[in-house]
Length: 296
Length: 296
Image (tube, rainbow over all chains, first blue to last red; front, side, top):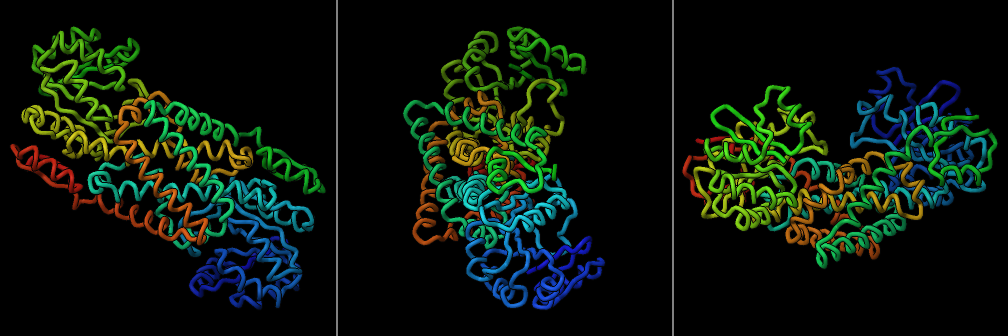
């Protein structure tokens, strides 16, 4: 568990792992090894606290936030935003919370796995529900920009539905594909032949299961909608293949969708925005597929 | 369309594309631009003819094989083996046919897209059904080895079931995933956030649709079995997520399957085999996930 605050140019943090704290300090990082002391320092300096941990660990940390920095500026990088917001409402209701989610990561852990370029050009969702503190919203956007990311404003529930489709469903399909190859009647033969399309399609099935589970189970509603959509489309492909032998609707539709994705992330999708733009207007930009590169 | 024959060290071919013929000749390749003349030369030299084209184009070429090189040594690199064998039985029944399928490729076309290392360390299936000519079987295995590949013997129907699971199903799941992301209620937002897991999971949806369709529709029975297995597993995940919220069986199963795949292709899986080993014994090696590196 880590809590980091940005005060001017100084970034400092706390971690539950002694090894990580020592490795970070050896690299010159400002580390406060005691979480409670770090939170008191954050309260004193009015720092932005960033929670970086799987959702199941959040409630315990929020209890300590409520005790030691109850009104702090607070964000996070957890991959679900509605459940996270609800956890903050319950555990640290006075914190000035604005959720975040950088769309970047690796399957590695620990200080040595850190990378200064991980967030470069990544989309970083900043929750933009009504009622959030606009000053903290700006803090979180500026944190994202300072990491080289593009800011995508989104309502918490819309974020969860979107990542159910593009991040959590891929993990479920990867697991299904791996099992279909390994557990079928042709098991050993199929596994020995599996290469390019299988390797790519199952890559995320190699993620540590507890991380995938925390992510997917934390977004039950959003993932259910995505799985139902996938079941419907896969069932339609099955029916078409069985009745007419044709898969054109499925294959052409997938090809067009992949082309749209490739085109959706070009320079045309990047805009600046005036400081003080309303949260409703910000959400609308995100809905249209736009990403913010900075203040206008 | 290309027909290539290997006679000693000389490889030569024919192609329906004038541009490809000229580019190949400029690189020093021995090209016979007229397909019928190439087949007559193959018959004269008792060369191994390799058919490299999508399944829908095969019947027309086989008619010309039957006319100009009716008893030639014949193999192919088409991704389905039962339909291909049936096409040869109908179109060129006297050809000494042994089917092949190298598990390697790109989405590119034309002479310039050729690569001397494409087949290096790839698995190359050589059909091993009873009744095949053992001399031609050895020719095809030696062709694969000369390209740097490992030979996996398999019955045509077993091959088709296996590639339905590890090659054709990934194309269908990629198309479904791309469409779920692009066509959902959160379309533009979802596409703008889609990154790593989505990019990998949909890569093959970017293949030219006519190639994917020829491949998948040519393996209707094998693909149907794989799609049904995937539908069952995805439905089970859906039910578990909806009722208990848990996905452990799906996620842990996928993780174990992906680990098994990573372990299945190591040095332990590579063996040599005595010349003259029966086709039944060869098939059994392939069933056990073994790959042949050469004659013992």
